[in-house]
Image 1 (cartoon, rainbow, N blue to C red):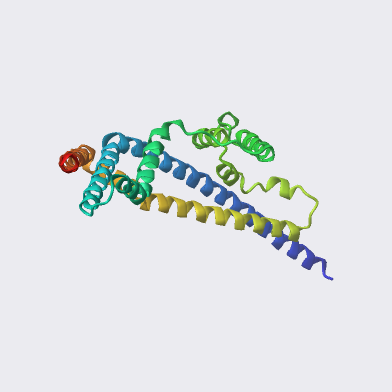
Image 2 (tube, rainbow, N blue to C red):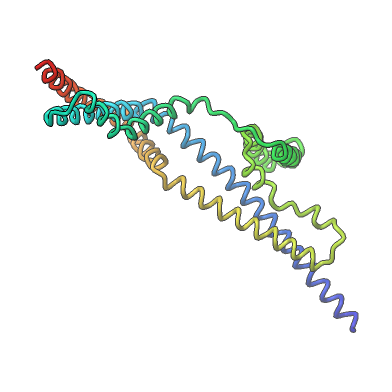
Length: 274
């Protein structure tokens, strides 16, 4: 075989390896940027959700409770007109609205416990894997290990995210940021074709992770909370306080519902005495 042919083939394969390495490095950068974007987006939405609950959400909970109680009294009054016994009336009311009551109570408890979210403990094997990922990423992205200003800034964005993911046992974030570890792959005693195959596998994983991140970002932006956040911020830029307006509207509805509930209670009590 012509030696020149061997040189040409090897050169071509090595160029392909270099191309794959460059593409993988670019994809790694995209994943890092998308991960930061996603986590910042989630933080913004969570912050707005707390703000919304404090200003408006609590009135919705109150309105739901008053409306449910009104429905219960309407049913009591209807059943009494049908000459149903008191015990049977209460049993039917409880059975009819059990799920509604449980849903409202669960939503209220969830709102009250949002500030005290507990981190689930991982099994020992997963905890060790999490620690290994964290140490590797902390070593790779430590800001002090780069003298380039832009690179330091990038690492300063990533390190708080890495620390929080480790603290909250978030394996997904740490795994995504670990994709594209090609150094160890290229140091193994493998042929060029084997290395190329492993690089292609790595690139497919990176492409899949990039696609998932973009889908997650689009899903959050399409959600009701983010859409409302955008509306509130747009109104604020125009000098309008949309949350205060929403809260005032819901408070009026709560007051009107309480008046209706009082009327139903009086009607129930008056019929009971009669």
